[in-house]
Length: 223
Length: 229
Image (cartoon, rainbow over all chains, first blue to last red; front, side, top):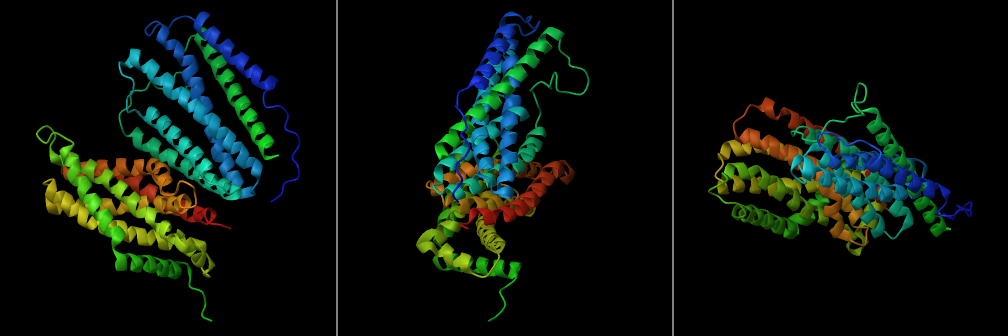
């Protein structure tokens, strides 16, 4: 299929990406210097402002992969495939951040780097699935076939997540229940809550900015 | 000319073809069977037999071995069609593409089932399990586990054979999908072998059954996308 030459996608690095980086820097500075210490955990709790926002952004990115996989098999639009690729790479990045910051936080607080807990397992398997997705992408030469294979894997992985979640749910859990995203008002003092919200927004913007940049890079490459 | 066969008739013909090839060569079956028995024996020495009772080890050993043996068997499913581009002839046949998937999956199910039919009693004997309980309790669990494993594995086998990495890619694609199967089967078998009532194993059995239903349907629908258009 020959595409009519796509609209010029614009530069890969632009104001949006710089805005995202500035937002993340602001969130980190605010978390470190202008947010009170948590009484029981002390400085270790500061990683909360990175860990949870990164996890939410990872879910956002991988959710995009799943939706774009369905869209591609449905509409056969190469843009859906490109967006899925961009989101998968960014999703792998954020999942890695979650898996690195989690043990760093767990060691001083739980006394162990890793516990075989449901959220940890789920994130680990998201990482494995995303890695497999990207390896598969690199292993198929034919463009149309690569897009179809990846879409199939993206959809099956989305179907798998509830099963992994259910299986590990039946194991006992050590991970704290959500502090903010739970029924009822947030169990967090206002200052901490604002820092956390700033963190979530900053990471979400960074996530979107990176996906956008990666997407543009792919358009440039195909053009 | 005779009418082209229906979905299930076509699937059955394709499964029979695969099984006939296997029955005449027996190469894959013997190597997978020996691998399974070797793995069961080797696992025994990886633990201190005086510290961990073999009945506690048995379910884990069985299901981990079973998934790896399954992977070995599944590789060959579409691998043998890649030789001399035999897959082209299969695609030219006037049958629905879903029938190719179902036929391949059925043949793989018989293959994996035959390996299990020997491996399960062997495990019971080597790990000193109550033989009758092991076979009557683990047999149905094994059947459920095999369906899920084959459903996903057959689809990925068809994909992997078309990649540059070929069979190297199959474990990476399949193993995350086998995790719920291994977890659920191990949990059910541990409880049944310990003589616990079936109700205690029910949540895990439900996961296993739901997994089979979801992935048999999803993989059948997804399969045509893994073939050349």
